[in-house]
Image (tube, rainbow, N blue to C red; front, side, top):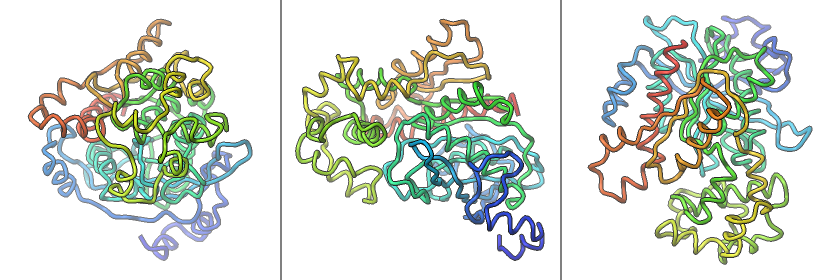
Length: 426
């Protein structure tokens, strides 16, 4: 899209509204206010989207694409961690179109998985997560907004508050507001229904956003379905368990989490050497998200099995304290992010895999589900895709299967389950 075309299409009032970011789309919030104009990244036809799934042999999962999809990037205001802070986040907006997809559309707000590269944006046609969102959701008639979260892509925030409930929720909610504010510019017709999903870190953000809407924002958002996928809903329990049962990615994910809580609360450690061995104590506090390439970053981190990588990275005394001391400050900070002890109302699924080597199904999805059911909640279903992943990819060599499991093999199957739920509430 060119600015001149939209100037004539929408008129001077709408045009100036977007440029000056002075309109709130009628929601009354400054949060979610647009910063500048949306940027169109590209458009893929239904045939091109079918080719994406064909190349990775996933055609049966999303079904044949019904819509063309335009990918745009928006930039919007949202709070920082500390009271009174206002910053920004960017997001991708996926807009369906075509003769089979006249709209109006439900809006899926999606939380992306853990990303270590600071520059990575969801509004990128080469991003694997964006491919999945285009083929499984947007190509099937869902509008999608996928926030980049604080500290990534266009965000000016100085760090990323990793697995932090408050800013995950504000980024997700404000991405909905921003999409509504940009809808006229994007030619997007929405039907008012909101659905939430997210994978891995985004699964945590998904459930946290569901809780926030149900408890405090139901008048603003018509939430009809939620699919939280392979998320760490029991953060404190996962940290404690992981201290003696290290996960795949322990050398990056866990330091990222600990340093994030130090940045947020200032209490995770007095000095990095309290937690990390040399040489990692010298640079880990400023490493993630990184501007390095994946290869450059990996070269700086310990390798080997999860047990070997954990032993190289962490002080044994710290791990023991994390595993056994409920007053450990990292454990206590994680406790603030736990998503247990509330009663979901919206039809929901918790999807994951009992074979996931990174986000433990037993420690997270199963414990969350058991917690909900113990109080009589009937709106949540637990879904295990381990058998489907095994059937599809069990022929891979063991090392490739293990390393790719959480990040690449599991997501399509859980996203299919999300689509099935959403189709019932579309």
